[in-house]
Length: 254
Image (tube, rainbow, N blue to C red):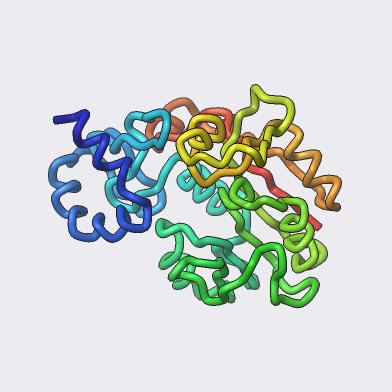
């Protein structure tokens, strides 16, 4: 039964999983009731989190309440504790907005919040990241997380993000990470979805980034801080919030 649950959970496309969660959430909260682990996005606690992963299953990582994963919870804590995102007046652009954040960011009284994507129903502006309809130096804060690994011309996408970011502004550009890899790997000849999933980690990824990702961002013009925020947290917090120890947040400034 447990194996069947994992297969069903991870075979459902994430947008459908999110819709299903609204129906299943009350039952999940009851079934997983407890205080062992906490989702910092909404403060709810559970006896355990759900498994998740396309090619490799990760146990105890998917929050039953917000459907946040490790990267979402880490970013939330960083924004909340280390930035003025929740306090300062900011003009914010959010690419491919994550469901865990969307409604919460939309309600923040201090930010002017715009979402963009080519296909997402949550996008205010339908736009190609490689050809954005925004003026130069438009935004104080840009969020573009787990997007660039989908984009064939990621150089152009980075240039566009840099162009529309205000001088002194901040862009957070998270990616799936393999920090054991020094160089990014991509191969346009790999088109089979199963083969892409095996090599790149997901069927719709076109590359797997290495540590040279940060230098590529610097070559575009960004000043990049490689923030290992888990290094500033206790082991108890890392476990409580179910974070990936050592995950780097690329904090890019113009």
